[in-house]
Amino acid sequence: TFGPIIPVVKFSSDEEVITMANDSNFGLGCAVFSGSQRRARAIGSQLHCGVAAINDFASNYMCQ
Image 1 (tube, helix red, strand yellow):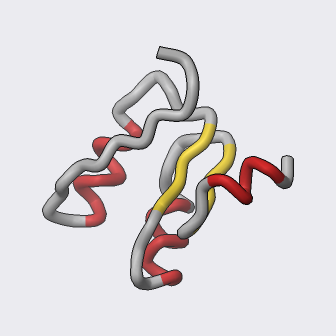
Image 2: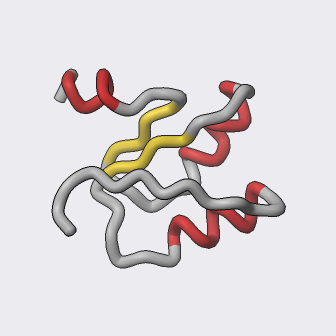
């Protein structure tokens, strides 16, 4: 598959989801959605990807 893929995954802790997200050979870009901006930034800063968007998807890519 080529193109944006948006998986929705259940997780028990922030550490678990960070480990799952980083356990991939892919990661050009990522998006983190949360009701807490601080939590989303904390998670996004630990992801191994080229571009991290916080509570956003499309407008972040339009600005490139």
